[in-house]
Image (cartoon, rainbow over all chains, first blue to last red):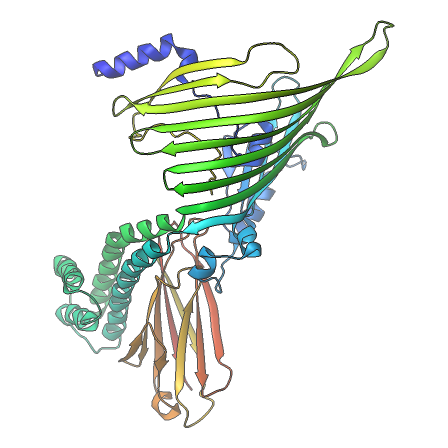
Length: 406
Length: 120
């Protein structure tokens, strides 16, 4: 164990409260509203990608008595459960309002057992976008052309397989030359040379029977496809880089399934964010939260935030206003049961920063004033200095100020 | 990462004796600008990535048309890939083959659809 690893572990033990010390932004829409409303991340999350797996996942969520199992999560995007043969890239990137909602709409659900009451809780939520920013069309077109060229190479290898199976080409050398001839004039000589080079690398591993040549061409397809993955990855990543305005809505409810599915929590979120550059993001978030137990508590929050992120550091600033109402059971001077209504206005301001002090270690600083509680009086001032140690991550700790995730 | 092969067979019977048979291919699931295809008539290469003219009935009836479509999966939301083949003669409505759909195993995998069409 290196000295730096040892020091970090000791620091973590000494400052155990601050190891996780990064004040969570209040300006975000939870990525899974159902998990957010329960304040719980299930250990097992099902993410079906087709109708069949959705059916299986739903059936597997119940025990043999028909009761919902606990500690399960489900996230599903209904539109993407099936294929869309009519969906063009242009429609995907520049959808109208209805298509934007369809493409982004997701449902989530989660079950958990309340460790205090022993009751089973169910959360159900949704999330969708109304507007999804502006894609980097020029970059996408350039990256798409790279992918298409490489798809054409795979098509050429596959068509050569047809010529071999039909007996037109009878040797490995003829097959390799056939690919070369087919690609000539369609693309740069360098790309063609790469295919031929790969073909010549594997040619010795196969015989000259049609079946062996077919296997060689299939191996060549697989190898080239693997080589080309980086281009597909780049193209795919570009599809999700958006600038400009993003508008997103979400909602969730929490139910007590041990008490006739009574509603215990409701949450509604709205978020507008604006990327002025890939590194600079402004956001405006509003949310309404309602919680009903012995005391019912509702609050409406609205706030703005700014996030700057780059490879060296992240900074986020946020300010939120809150109007809250608590209906608290109480007893008056005549010992009669009453409901005491507490109404309050409070606010939160926070600044957070993250900076890498070594390749494995980030230092995080959060300070500001949190919302006042309806139950207790305190200044609400917080300042937290924390360390994040990561064996794998080489990026500064990500902050989140209303940043809209997909 | 893997390649998924989808091998398909069908039949297209020419509707006229004299009109050219045109083959058009569409790729769905937002992969239309990154996919690629080739059309063969028998062992003769006809075209890549554009409408293929197979000639008239007498030109095709003793041969098979083979269409190879490469569809890379690029969307993170789904692993579905798809392609549709349209064949028309003159101004008549096209005959539609498909849409053929396949869900690849992992994001960024590639689907290879091979459709063989006989003509009698």
